[in-house]
Length: 348
Image 1 (tube, rainbow, N blue to C red):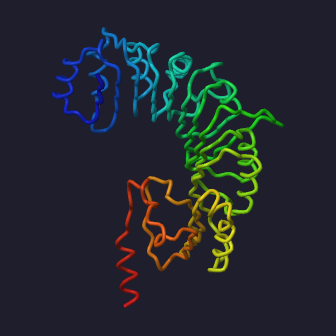
Image 2 (cartoon, rainbow, N blue to C red):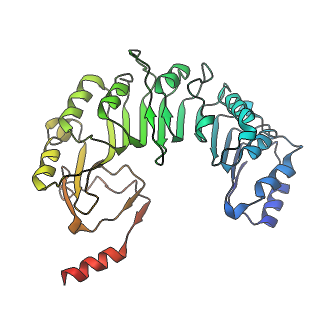
């Protein structure tokens, strides 16, 4: 039995709760939103003396720490193999209990997938339960990422996905003079990352087993020759490299500058051996910025830009290769029609 509770009307929600046999449930999703106020409390009051004994997948989205503590009282965490937690607001009254509960869940021997977006004080770093069996880890709202500690404590880990908090400074914290390599990891993804390429290279040196790397963020990552040399020497198994990187520029660029960047991605390594195609765009309007992305796009949403404000060059010829879909991963497109109309008027 799989149950998901999203925006149910209160009478419907109460009826659903009465129909549920907690002994049969194997998957549970609880989502707390403005439209579902008090429904988490209704759920807790209905099941406070009952026990979900077979739950294998549990997702608690947008809940507060008080609810987290009460919900877990009716869940058998020993059977969990997937757990997702989003806590939007911190509550100092539950600081110790929340950290203890989270640590207890992470330590479960059956847990294979862990996803969380929680206040920084709750993130189990720099100490994780030793010898966790987690294989897939996703961290949202991250401020300090300590990959060495995580990889040392999670020997079975195969994939890491980290989304950094955009409103705050964030850091990748590497152990001093770390030379230990970690061969268990095969996929690494960063979103909203802002760092120097030297630090990123220092991290990638520690995980030579990567076959997938995704980078979304800000920084000077536009040198295709540098990427080529680094990958050839240090990431021999990398077969999927996705990126969407941007950097604001204080000085004006012209077409020749964009051509210089795109040329570094036109070597046989990029076009023939790896078949990794890229597009480089220079946004002329303030703030001026240079954008480089792999094809197909690896982002889920994008903002449509009026063509006259962009210099765009690509290594991918859509006319000669119609098998590659550029927009497959795009779910949302934002269009500012007012700017389009203003541009049309100014051109008349």
